Image (cartoon, rainbow, N blue to C red; front, side, top):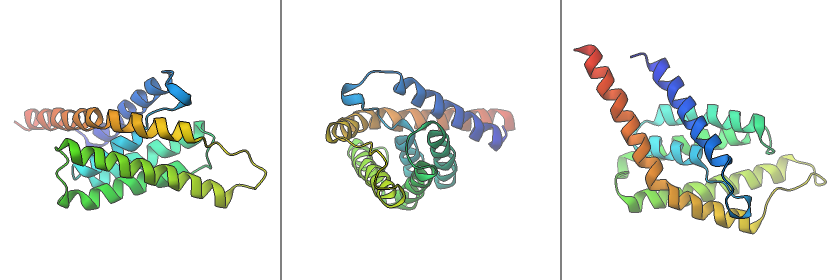
Length: 169
């Protein structure tokens, strides 16, 4: 199986699941950050290059359709995947406590990073898209969804690994 096919299908699956979540009406217009959690999960499982690459592509895709500064989500998701991947040697990404900690720290880093980038690079008269309740519910949704995201990507990687072994034999 081609690594390009794996990467492209991973991109499409992640993007499709984020779009599904965007269509659900959550409280305070909050949306769980499936793609940020996915970059954390892939990085936490030691797939640093995949997490960085998909994080950048997912983030740029979000930037095209979003209201944030163009490139900010791409940069932050790429950096999130990199940091999680670098820390993966010291982490056991199978433990729910580790998953929740990564989700909490990743959510904080992502939201704080977006806020700082918007603050520095937008004009003072530009509208700000920040609400305490939206941030609170996004944190809660990310924490609730984190174990499912980690499980999903672990199964996805196992599926592709099994397909690769079958093809090789």
